[in-house]
Image (cartoon, rainbow, N blue to C red):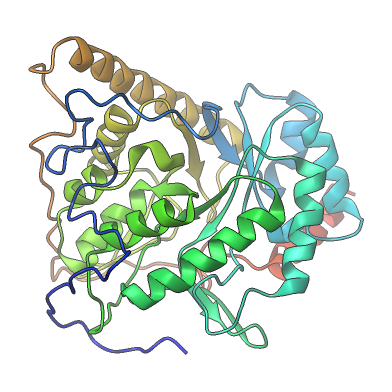
Amino acid sequence: MCPTSATADRQPEAPRAGEVSHHGASAAGQDAETGAPRPGHAEPPRIVPDLGVGLGLRVPHYAYIHEHQPAVDFFEIISENFMVLGGKALLNLERTLEHYPLIQHGVSLNIGGPDEPDAEYLKKLKRLVERVRPAWLSDHLCWTGTNANPIHDLLPLPYTREMIRTVVERAKRIQDFLGVRFALENTSSYMAYRMSQLPEWEFVSEIVEAADIGLMFDVNNVYVAAYNHGFDAYEFVRNVPHSRIVQIHLAGHTNLGRYLIDTHNGDIIDPVWDLYRATIELAGPVSTLIEWDDEIPEFPVLAALAAQTTQVRDEALARRALRKRDPSAPSFALGKHLLPTPTDSPPPTVHWRQGGPRQSAASEAGAEQAFELEES
């Protein structure tokens, strides 16, 4: 089991022979201070296509999507909700595939858990990959219990060399087995480990580089973790390998005063939009998804948010192009700092299920069944 212990300061350990330490530089040719390509270094090629701005495919919106076929660049599905042999779930999946690209995002891989990834789970996941044919597939850089006793929550990992080696070896095998570009997402967290040896951005960077996989970069999670743990959110954004970012997640969260909870509901706050602008300026045109998984609004509300995201993305890409022509032009990313400060204000009244937006396949199936009864 992963140890659970309180936060304490500890100096990062020096890299061992044969290991890579980025020391703030996220990739070869990427400046350690700015995150931008160093002079004389061409930008690495993108490892997946840019699909634009997408939304999560959720049960309450099935009828609207099938009837109106709204202008959405792509949809993201939670893999576990469709890892079945038949039924209404796959019918809705096939109807959506007729008109939209789909990307798979999982919540149960448990890549950092005490057990090896479950073989039966991977077989079902591969069967779904063969049906969907996504340009990439992602899950979370976390652990979720044991194979026999899943917790159905995304628990943080200790940022250690040993954990890097474990996750890298597993990620390589998973990507080879699935036959599709695989990516891991940085998660939100509410605790840390005394045994951690390096900052989260170095931990994430070393894993995706050494395993030759993609990074699912959740900008809201960066902000939530920075608020909860007291680090500079822009330092995180600048010091991950930008050419490895296959997709960006944007979402709302719940502010409880002394800490934030990644609830995936409500509006995206201005500091998260600013971090997104910085990410796009550094990484270029990366597929972006709006996550809204609790208290889900009507589809037109999300469509309007996707349009706003496209506008912000275009603004950041224009700034990126300007800075390529004139490096002295103002930047969304360089020289910026953000250390969100928790407050002792009384927490608001909130309502969410344990696990927040991380619904299991069973709960989603129950919601779909209720929705079908409502339709009939």
